[in-house]
Length: 309
Ligand SMILES: Nc1ncnc2c1ncn2[C@@H]1O[C@H](COP(=O)(O)OP(=O)(O)O)[C@@H](O)[C@H]1O
Ligand SMILES: [Mg+2]
Image (cartoon, rainbow, N blue to C red; front, side, top):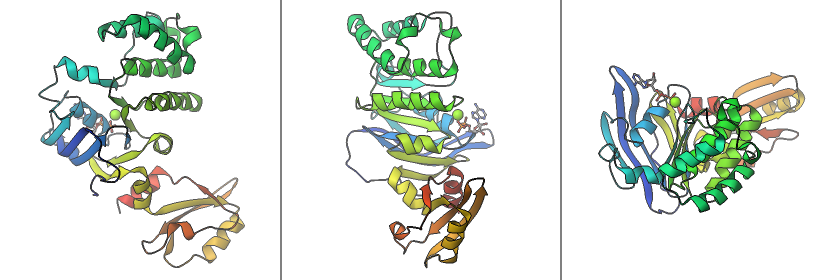
């Protein structure tokens, strides 16, 4: 396991997790996980089903207690502070399923939570109009949520989690179960809020989420952290690159692999062929520019396998 990154400037620390383990009877859902999330980061907690993402978020929120290890959120232990109101004001949370009231309108949903958070209503109304317009929900604000698509509900749930302008936002698989278009819109909404200097921890199974949103990544597999640090470090740590093109160009590349570059996997599809290459430590990854081939994102599966070798 690698240590959490110390790259970049230390601004005020939002979250620090140290050697956290959590057992459910004999099942070890988290094993010795450490990570830091600092102000302004978008930290993606990446991992398949059962990796321990939701368990970690529940621990951060003080809903359950770690079996061992320590958690500090805004400098305090979330378990001891779990019933404190102040903590909740500083946090925005989206859990599955979307916490919305289906029998009232979208607008009424947001207003209900605005009142709970005691937001100033005139200002809230103006901001909410803008936000709903930006994510394409404003024209339908008076419809009951029960009639909405999964993508619209998810966007509304994110607005709900974010509208009190929390300092730190935890989203558990915000685009899971959505079609490609809605995923894009939900990510745009997250990016929009990011510009307001909000800090995010986003659980995801989707590597494209990492590519599009993350500044930092923690990769969990079966409760263990395989990597925690910057996005650039994540790709560097795996030392993999993937190229796609015609079968001939791929063959040509494989015949002339430079020293220190190994073939991990070769694939073919209707459009041609792809190769995944491992670039050894002594080789500069940027020196490989295969003729005729386009670089394509490395699959999460490959990074998993590589980091777990
Ligand atoms: N309350 C619980 N009781 C027993 N096992 C649990 C409980 N919550 C989670 N688990 C188990 O812990 C592991 C991690 O689950 P979870 O944190 O939900 O993973 P993820 O969110 O990454 O899919 C899984 O094997 C899951 O079945
Ligand atoms: Mg989960």
